[in-house]
Length: 198
Length: 241
Image (cartoon, rainbow over all chains, first blue to last red; front, top):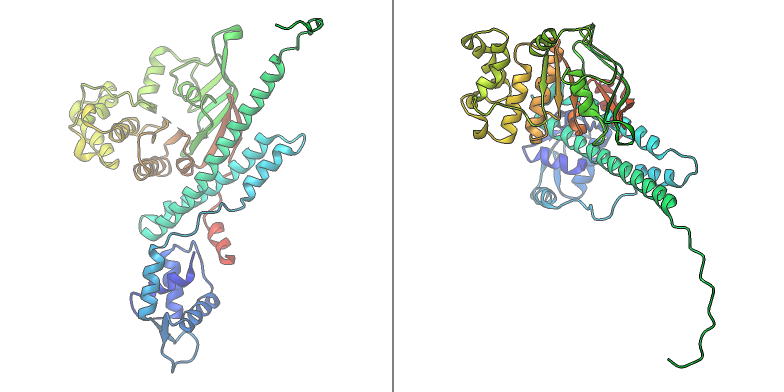
């Protein structure tokens, strides 16, 4: 989540004080991404340094200082909205690593490892759904933020399901191969090679 | 009160080496007002569990109790009444009658139970309306989309204040938003109306609406979620981010 660009988006509606920016940010994201005051002011100072926002210079640092977006800030916001985030290289996912490692550790029940993670993820999804149930009807931003989290968790569960099925199938194939592997027939007695040309 | 209880229920089809054990000593219960989701891979026994809970099949062994009453001791008539009055069942393939309109399909269980068509129409239309189908009440199943047919089937299962709703993949034909509408309705009926729901689904996003998620594997209950913590814990965690 780019707090920097979220601040620019809020300021694109008109000048605001730092404290107001923090409240609006949390309100619109349903407190899914809470911010502390320090983060807000650090971000605003950097934005001001980069010429993307400007403040009423006469006011002292603090809650009474108002900020407004500059023309450069508006251009930066428009550019950011249309630029896809970099998803080209897969992250080093701890869960994937755990399942891969479980396959190599002797005596580990990989199915039980997968189920422990699956259960945890479903419980998380239940919790997120309660947020949606309680208030998402009233606030579109909350519904969208919670949906994003639910779809992300759902994709991980689906990966676990596929991993579980693949591992079971591989184990079944291996067992079948061991069971039906033909015993090599004894070789026929070797005949002396004829030296006669064919 | 336990609305549904399966005690050591097993179900086998066929015999000997050709036999299939669909359920193996499954014990599962659902309290009044509780919403339980059942998840598991294909062939894990989810649908069999539901047909037994709905008294549509008899288990090979074990016991089924509905509202504390053992089903095995009931006469055929008593079982039929139980299915008509207490249990609402959403089939995976909807099972709508093609010659009846959406409203007529929904009111059918009420009419079979002795209510006049005129009186049954009011709760029937209300059930359709809650699922966003008020304007489609006069349409026949072949005039409805797959998602609309599915919602008609859900309205039919919920109409008449049933105490136990059993749903087999109730959102299979629905997009995410409509699937959520259905789950909201089911949850609302559980929390406000005291209905008990057991929902079989492969979709974790829908299972998230349940109070408890039970995992089935190879005909056995292998795991279940703990009661979901309130959302506060998630929101509090975020402060550190």
